Image (tube, rainbow, N blue to C red; front, side, top):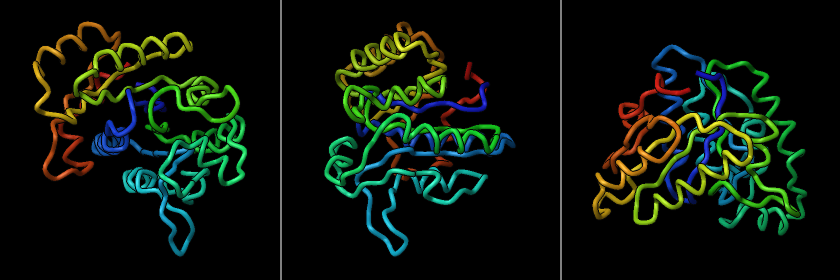
Length: 226
């Protein structure tokens, strides 16, 4: 198992943070020190301490190493829109280099298990022709892919896996997050994903009535990570 991974999703709203928090919780249960980071986030809420993002706060809650919020989520934007559009509206230059320095500082803390969570899918724009996936490439991190299991997920998952491989990164594992339990031929879809994705399935997380990192962790197997 590597000490650090990049968490990517097949799309937006597939449960990346839910799974990331579950993985961090599972690592803590295994006696590992943990640290989660969200380099860029939109849809933040204004608090007395500044903009705060619910996803970043969820990662902080499952991190045994505590960092200032601004280190965990250095770029926070209020509108719930694509990060590159939110940054443009805020007059912020959102570049790979701008994200790279704070994320290297996060990794330098040397936690046993660090997760850096992306935003949306794999090809989320930053600025110009740069994408958030370029940050994962610059950091040379293996990727854990969260597959939101619903109609169309096989295509999304395979295309994402192909893009990760094309970018020269290792797909270390994937998690089936069943966001739509009434998906037609659910078991057959899961079997197709397992046959075609070139990495182990770290777990199948059902749609939970009470969502918590502890509940999600029960469905995950960290020891399967490459």
